[in-house]
Length: 268
Image 1 (tube, rainbow, N blue to C red):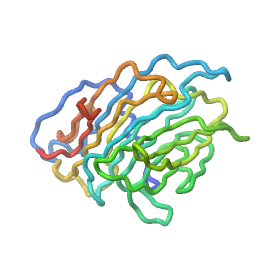
Image 2 (tube, helix red, strand yellow):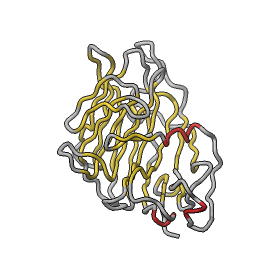
Image 3 (spheres, rainbow, N blue to C red):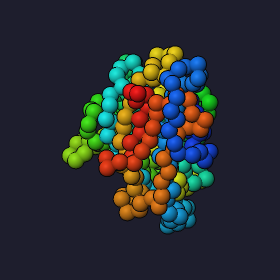
Image 4 (cartoon, helix red, strand yellow):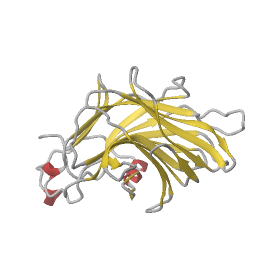
C-alpha cells in the first residue's frame, strides 16, 4: 500500500497471502517477468494487544529504524515502508521515499505518513486527502535522508479533537538528529489502537518502464526489528518473504547482522 504524487497502488494486498520464502533464479528477461519488480516483505506478529484505560485494545505507539544502504537515484521512486493496522479501523503506513511531492511542487526525498479511511490531516508539509483506489489522508515532508545513516520512525496516538482521535508520525536521524513531525491524521473515534500485526516492505512505485529486469534500478535498505509502546514490547516472531508469484528475480530479503535487509533490482 502506498501513494505518492497523488497516485495510489495497492501492493500491500500481497501481504495478506502466506507465501514461501525463497529466491527465484532465472534469466533477467522481461518476456519471462511481465509484471516488473518482485516485492520484498518482513512480516511481524506481536503479543496480544493490551486493553487500555478507555476500554479499547491495542498498542499506543510503534517505532523502528531504517538505514538506506543504496540511493536508487533521482529517476526511480522507491518506498521503504512500515505498514500497520488499527483495531476496528483502517491501515496506515509510514516511511521514507526517494521521490515524493514537495510543498512547492518539486519532487525529491520525503518522509510520508498515511492512513486509509481517515477523516482529516494536518502538518507542516503536504496534508491532503486521496481518493484513488481507496480513500484516506496523506502527509509528506521534504526529508533529505542520506545513504548509510540511520533514521528512527515512530507512529503514536497523539491526542483527540472534536472529530476523532489523532495519530502522529515522526522521523529523526539517530543518535542525535532533530526530530521532525511528518504529520498528524485524525481517525474515527470508534477505532482502537494499533493491532498485533505489521509488515515492512520495499516497493518501486515509479520510474522508467521495466523492459528488462535489469531496468528495475537497485535499492537496498536495512530495517531494525520494531518495538511498541515506547520500546517496552517486542514482536514474538517475524517472517521474510517475496511476492508470490514472483516477477523479476532480482529481489531478496534476508536477516543479517545489520538487521532485516531488503533488496530490489540487485546486480546479478
